[in-house]
Amino acid sequence: MKWTFVTLFPQIIEGYFSDSILRRAIDDELIFVEYVNPREFTKDKHNKVDEPMIGGGAGMLMTPQPLDDAIEKVKRESKEAYVIFLSPAGKPFRQNDAKRLAKKEHIVLVSGRYEGIDERVIEMHADEIFSIGDFVLTGGELPSMVICDAVSRNIHGVLGNEDSLEEESFNSDLLEAPSFSKPFTYKGLDAISEFLKGNHSKIADFKNRMALSKTKYFRPDLYAKAKAKL
Image (cartoon, rainbow, N blue to C red):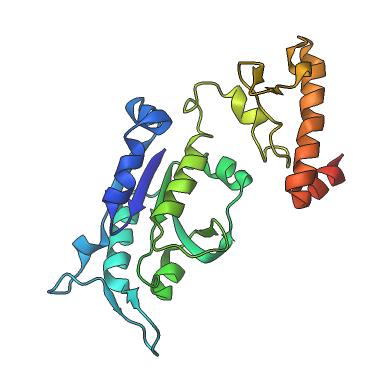
């Protein structure tokens, strides 16, 4: 898959791909990453990419021309480009979205800055709009990285052990069961002894019951969905 980050601050994102799983995915040519900076497309003689909001309001807004031209260039060069904007107004991003988007060939993530993006650019180019939560950030770069990470790990070959995808939280509307590592006893606290008994079917059943209990306690909304499917 190809990822294109449309951002005024590519250096914020670049470091995230310098190590660990996504670094290996790039080295193995499972994902490709590029950056497009709208400032390089501005026609303003002072290289400006923001303007005051029409009708008043605090702060500045990303003006349409540089961002529109940047996205147009990406779309001209790739018919598979699927453009996603990050906005508090977007639909909540979920694990099912990550799995669905992992089948795309080219995703373009557009990061806003200042007080946001001129609405006309969103109307012209958005294939989808996502929010990662009911809070406000200083820019769209962090949500872009969140979506890229969540989607990329669902691409075949990116994870070393793809069985782990089946056991993760949200794959069955449940949180993942509690996990433990060695030593068995740490500071007087024991891991769950049932995990040591060697009967894999019983362990799987026990983990499922633990996942139900954990979900019921931490996420009653997900627990209700899971129970409705049983």
